[in-house]
Image (tube, rainbow, N blue to C red; front, side, top):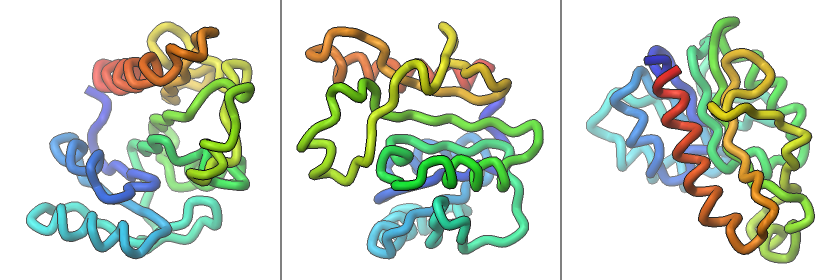
Length: 173
């Protein structure tokens, strides 16, 4: 119900998730890597999706003067050194009544060499992003999926389920 209109995917990678957004609105997708942008463009060449270079941390994009109804940022924020700048820039291109769907890795105590090797700067705690049972944050219209289990062995399994739960909650908002 709510994932419609102009949708921006931040950090589209090679377009796997971008493809699943096509049924919900007008898709714009950005990534900082030109090779990923090219692969996503190739994957979506027969669609109306707009794909190009964009750096949410620096506030530089291939599009100009567009406000989005929804922004989807899945497993990207942890790769951005100055995440607060990125969030500020997301809000600047989000309509006043728009929604942000954000999925981030949880449990800072798990941050280690694997995270560093894949370009993570951090993990987030449930105190940083407060969510309710519908995966809505304390900010109206902002959805989040954070694994809040205290059992490290279950984190990966539950994170996948919670990510799906957040998106389903967003679709039924």
